[in-house]
Length: 188
Figure: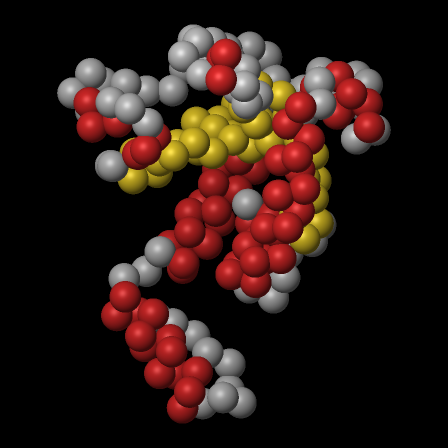
């Protein structure tokens, strides 16, 4: 997402909040409900997506350690919500493939549910199942936001496609980099 922001003319550093579960004690393992806080993260885009992912890993691990801090303190430490804003830019990712019953998701027509509300910022929920990735978003309902989010999602999709290409493309990339070390490499 940070690369998509940069590609569309935004900053090379993207500050965001991401949800973390807070079910750390055994007493809560079988409970039902949202046990979530948010942690701040700054993603700094590097020369390519893989380099950005590698350099962001340590920042994610530091942010996860904040999972015990109440959200009000996290937002305050991150500079608070700038009025008149009422929302935060937020990204969530859940991989359901390891959850109990994941193999039943399609047969029970399971899908993401979140509060339907007015939003003054963009929020994204990405989920992964055996069927692939799904994206749910919430953003202001106006022509500028719709156009911007459409371009943003297209750019994110393009970046994901680059790193999710079949093995044959990865092999071509490896061969190209060894045979033309001084030339820029492009993968069709």
